[in-house]
Length: 328
Ligand code: NAD
View 1: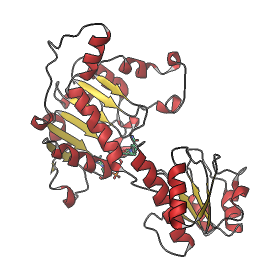
View 2 (view 1 turned 135 degrees about the vertical axis):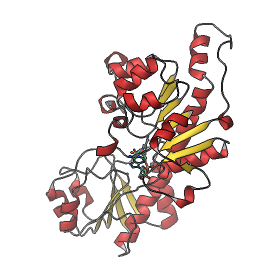
View 3 (view 1 turned 90 degrees about the horizontal axis):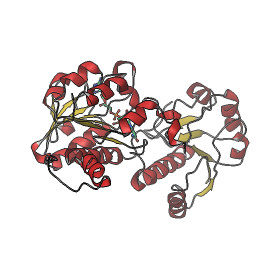
């Protein structure tokens, strides 16, 4: 089988080559994304696999793919809003995505940052950069004595709960969906209990109408003044000015953020540090705030899974099978 793969990252290439060798399928890797300009490159292939942030909504793209004899469109990513599902369906193309490629990748960065916060590592880094090597006044906490509150115990929140439990912490969670498989790792409760009882509050809900700014002045005020807030999910879940205020007023002890509401202006780009948004600069200057550039997903396991799950779906669908990742 001949497969064309768009927007292949350098980190994906070794996994694509290994998969191709193992399965005997031929894969052509492109640097460009799928668009009206590049769709013709898919002519002569049996399967197609894409990954991109730019929209491909033009029906002509789907009409062309169908005219080349393609039966599927695999998106090796979680979000699929860049795809015109209706046009795909109208042209007989089954679209798949990858809902969970490695929840552990994101969960582990959240836990790592929480561990750095409770050991005051940001303050120690700042002191030592100033030539101050005293540990006085910087007493830390141990994770096994702490309560962690998970808001949204899905793939990533559930994986986080498992790690925190393994480290000996008590884990509370709030989620409208009850997952019996998580019973060994957490205790379900309500949002107020999570906020008021937890030493670490870690949010893992999707960004949707009812979760926009779910962390705001009111919810932050309910947290312990000694508590840390972890957001590895989406920046829009947090009212950033309210978070900054809560940190400045010592209403909470610190935060770790892998996402910011306005991150698209500068994350994933190399920019002059002077031009980054003010909220980023304010937060970054705080020794009790850890920021990473939406990199929680970027592990070798996640990239291998993204490649293999996507390519396996291509083969399944081209051979007339069904995928549980099908979106239409
Ligand atoms: P998921 O769908 O598996 O889990 C989300 C959970 O949140 C579900 O169990 C759902 O019932 C629950 N939920 C929905 N509304 C809620 C509410 N109001 N209160 C409490 N719980 C609620 O999603 P996931 O794969 O675990 O992803 C979680 C978050 O992580 C998403 O925001 C996703 O976009 C983000 N994410 C970030 C990265 C990264 O690199 N930083 C990578 C992948 C995903």
